Image (cartoon, rainbow, N blue to C red; front, side, top):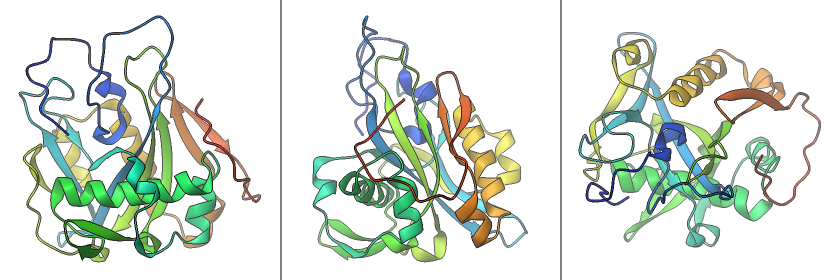
Length: 250
């Protein structure tokens, strides 16, 4: 994601851009709402040696126009190539069904690919197998957490899916691309001391709840979406089999 420090000062959509999804090329507001771009964010977590979970986050550079100095997860928009990218494993049925609640099969898989690709590009960590300059994703290690859609009055909008993976599934050294500072694992109980966007705090609350659930409870839980001005609602209240279909953003 490029440095946009030279761009004119326009209200950034990133205050409602979950997980720091790619806001490249945003424009001033226009009369008709723009269609939200599909994006994926990955919450990589591990148990802390001092007790309690830690998540991988970094702070946006102060010179950037959107989300300066805010803590974000690795993530970004889905690229066309993500639909054709190879993987060393596929999404588990439960994760795939949850993604397909609001996405077709090709997009559901591409969201997983995008999450792993962005992790590699922004942190240097590989969740899968390194193949040249790309990563063949280990999609079976991903779990679905929730979804967030940027409000309709924003000039750049995202339909972001938040995915979860254990840190043990990734390998390599955290190097970063320069976009994120203080890129490391942060304890959940210490994040209150860092500047975090409101939607990120809400997603962290969802993650805390998810961690406390058993595998069976995770499979049967309500699936949550944030839309509008951080409005939280359940888009699936039962574990009934979800249908596959076109992406629906609302």
